[in-house]
Image (cartoon, rainbow, N blue to C red):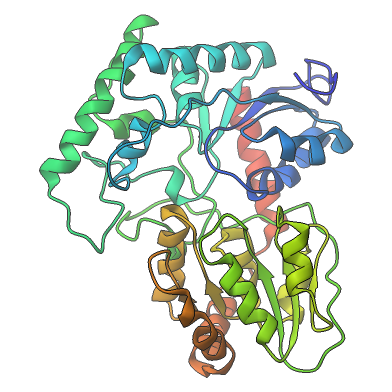
Length: 408
């Protein structure tokens, strides 16, 4: 437990839930759950947090009065080549051997028990799901499509542009299943027959829209839509003529510096949020027409005021601009982001420069972003389709469902 917060969490009486975040980074995880956590607390539900990145929790949660834990996370084990399916990702994070997996499951079990949770909300947290299963605690998935692969055996190809034999995918899954079953056997629980069985949970739903699901071939599913990130300030645009462009970039992504250079040359008003960007780099690109935000920006307001966005394919930022009918140029840094960016590109509302493409394409793509009317038209079509989507109502409905599941 961190910051001396009480182990009983926040709120009094009622049920208790644990938000479990195991894999992934960035503010979108905590920021997305925060409005739901507030709604649950108002209803008397005790909310506990297990977070993968403490530096984000310490910035956001103490001021909100929430208790939080460091999530148990296995170190990554390199494997040859990129991950081919979801099981391939699991093999890189402790799922190659039962004893190695048990070493992460046991801390998750103790954390769940210490929190007194009657329900686990799994935000890309497969090991928390497994630990909850060994304790007979129900689980509700809380996240986008990438976190919950379709219920198929083997787990589907994550690189649809590169045909992969089913035998290869089956062989990868076959390495993961014994580790999962070894843990389940250790705790006297029934075995699984596939990796997909791990995601057989009490509530299987997705915080995204069908058009933007990482798995285009998923088939019928329950889509909640998206939630507003609750950690942001109003945008302050440079006083400069020309189009307004908001950029949300990560310094660790391959094309971050090239994107900044292209934005620096743009004739317009540019606002950039790039957490973790070194001060020397900010000084290099700062200009009267290009300002760096000191903290997260209110995406809804920024999207309404801007003409376009450049993102690293952050779902929260990208969808905020789609909901406002604005086109996006995406420079993803890894597979999850690239799969999401491809879906935006497929509906004609954005452009993608992937990690392997040369950065010198960025200036041309940026000009196309601002000049291609079809991109803006398709983004506007997405906005019209979901014009009546009410994020406030979604928060209420999700909180209702969480309450139902926690009460059993």
